[in-house]
Structures are given as C-alpha cells and as structure tokens.
Length: 410
Image 1: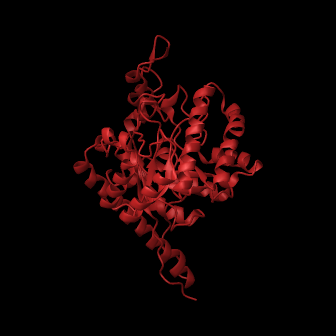
Image 2 (image 1 turned 180 degrees about the horizontal axis):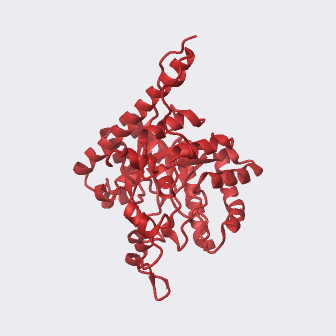
C-alpha cells in the first residue's frame, strides 16, 4: 500500500530570556504577570507557536551577580510570591488571546550547590516552578542538575540520588516532567563539567538511578546542540548512540541554538578552553569581583561563540568537522533515530549570540522573527524529506538516493 505524503512539523518557540526586560522593571516588579502577558504578545508578533517561560530568582535575591553570567537569565515568571490560581487564570487568558502556548518553564541553576543552605533555596524555588507548571497546565519544567564542585563525579552521582530523587518524586506527584538541559557550565568553577547531565552516557547513568526509585518517567533531556559542538560532538552520532543503547526516548524537548567554533582558539587551547591567565583568579583563589568572575567563561568563549539559528554563514566544511550545527541533518536525525512526538515536542530558539543580544524591541523583533522563520523552514524541509524518503518511497520499495551524513564520522 502506498503511503501518503504527510510531513509533520514541530512547534517552534522562543525562550523568554531572549529579551530579559521586555517589560520595564519598574512596571513588572509591581505587576509581575504583566511580563508574561507582554511576552506572549511579543511571541505572537515574531511568529512563535510557543514560549519557554523563563524563571529565575529575582535579581535582588540572586546569589550569582548578573555581571558574572555569560548568558542572560530572566524572571519572566516572577515567583517572589508563589504562583496562584488567579495569576494562572490571567496567563491562560493571555495565551488564548494571542494563540501562543507555554511549552515548559525553565529555571537554570545549580541544584547540587555545595552549600546546603543555598542548595535548599534552589530546590525550594524549583518546587515553586513545578507548582506554577501545574496551575498553567504545562507538562514540564527545564533546568540543570548541577554539581557539587567540592566532590568528584562519582560522589556527585550518589549526591544526585540523595538530593534529586526526592525532587523528581515531587515532580511525579504533580504530574510534571523534569527536562535536563545539558550545558556543562564550564564557568561555574575551575572544573569544566559542572552540570552532571552534560552528555548521553551520563544521561543514561542518571536515568538508571531514577528508574531504581520509580521516577524514570520524570527524567528527560532538553537537548541543545550548541553544547554538543562545544564538546566536539555531533547530533547524529549522539542520537545514534542513544538509539543503540535503547534510550531513544530520553529527549523530550530541544533548544535550537548553535555554536560556531573558532579554529584559532581551538589551536591555541584545545577543546578544554583557556586554562590559564584568564583573570578570574586573584592572589591564588577565585576573585569575589563579578567583573573578574566572568573571565571563568573563557573556558568556553576562547574557543567558540553562540549562534542564533540563521545568523551564521552556511559552512558545509564546518558541519563535517563538528564546528557548527548542520540544522537540516539535525532535524532529519531527530526523525530517523529518536522516539519523539513531533507534533508536541517543542523546538525552542534560545538567543545567546552576543552581538545580536539587543535589548530594544524594535531592533530585536526582526532578528528573532528571522531566526524563528529560519528554524521553522528548516524543520519543514526536514519533515518533507523524511516523509518522502522514509514513508512514500519506502512504501513503494524505492531506495533513497545517495549516502548522507553517517554517525561516528567527521
């Protein structure tokens, strides 16, 4: 029987940290949910189907100064006061008015912080995020696992079991999934890997521990290819590895953000990034000055720069060398190798290209609109190729032409 041509596109969205102060701070501090309403309207204007709603500790209460952060965070969802039913009704009305949905809520922080008191404040905040997700009928929260920088990876695996399993149990009682974003967060400490959930083999180890305690279904991955490129990996090979190991179900959301590797920087420092003479240590210990702390991120910025999809030159050689993201093959590999619900799995554009990180509505709107359009058209092309090749031609016994990109080769 001949299959019909039935391409299935994915919903495309935007992380609201792309514009941290869309709503002026003076207004949003007095009326917190105005920031969400404004962002839903802005998302509709730039062509997004969904938003990933960014939450963060209010700047006045944050333990990490803004100057020490490489990438922006935003408390679009303000949780100085717990989210409540009346606030949820207001946000639901804004979603209905704009036609833009909330895909998940993101809170990126170190949930395994070495200081017990600070760790507990972060865990408590994530629980508040989960409560907000329930009231907003949002299926997932997104964040980091983190790492205790005073302990080895092996010790952190045990710490994960003691600290994170109770958090996932709370997620289970709420019917919420926790999606781990895999950035290694090299600027957090002298070490490079400061977020346990940084690569597929670790995802599997963490998931196995979750399964032992009955919370495996609550642990999923929000995949971001920019971090793969940072660590010398490519998407197709990573997806193939997951499929080979029987974990093709783990990825449940995607960030659409690239990384453009600086070949000169890699020649100078290698993929570990700049290891000396950075300026983040003063008199033999980490500086307490936020202006100095940002230099810790030279472990990353010395060798690469974030890409907002569509803003980097088309460079086939860079694709083959794993020095930037091949977006078309990214979306093809997703369909060919993973077990995902394409109609509900979000593609979230994450804007962290420094030179285009403009906090001006009129200037930023066409930049984000262009990136969202690029992402949507690439995904539509991949959907068409997949349906044509793997459904229509396959149903008629007609082989796919050529070879294409292969896993484990560069």
